[in-house]
Length: 179
Length: 132
Image (tube, each protein chain N blue to C red):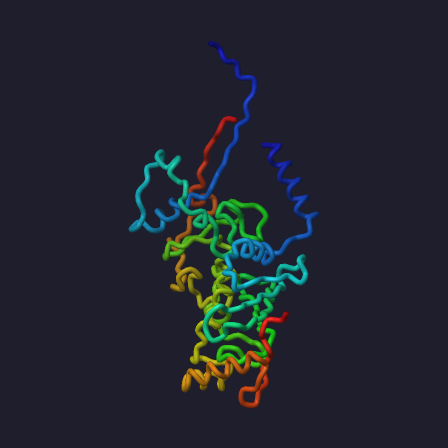
């Protein structure tokens, strides 16, 4: 018995010495090891020490956004998984569920987030937006209107925008893969 | 033949009895289990069932805010049969976005058997002794 208690004390002392890994970091670490991404998605860690800030590139292999390369940043705060990750699209793109600042309208990033979801679910959700853009609850109202009223015109606009062209008054980013 | 035992180490191990928790709180769905026969049957088909869905740490471990598992970081059952570290689900239910729902099924969270067992009688942590 005595031995056990002294062991516990040593453990406590050791725990104090180690720089504390936050709960969010532990959880993110687990999420990352469980990632099971299709070949259309790649993560990138600009600072490999920092698991809470990273990038995701989606290159849809189907749908209207095929041929584009879409970079997202993930910012995870210390309250993860109680708070959802903050996700932004870096290039300015023409999409009903993204605004011109790159904010994303995806239910599981907002009102439907729950802590049993993980990063894999968010990433798969993001990719789904490119396969099935939806006109309900839009962030880019013009794009949503086009999609609702004339799907083929919307598809044409997507192609124009992905080349860095204008749709209406807005010029969008060229998202064709470099090199 | 004569065997002389010079030395032995006794090792005790415990784990939360997840089934006991369900039995206690969910008599309708639970299979009554006789005390002795559950020794080997607890091998789970799915490892994921043994971790808290919120922090993804084993039930027998503790939530990320605690240092030692056991009574200091107990489990809690919902009437929906979902189990979490108590600290994890409380933290979630304290957030506005939880809408007081179970994070697994979005049903309103109701702690099962609201008359919680007294702190000195946790849901039957299992004791087993082994000679090494």
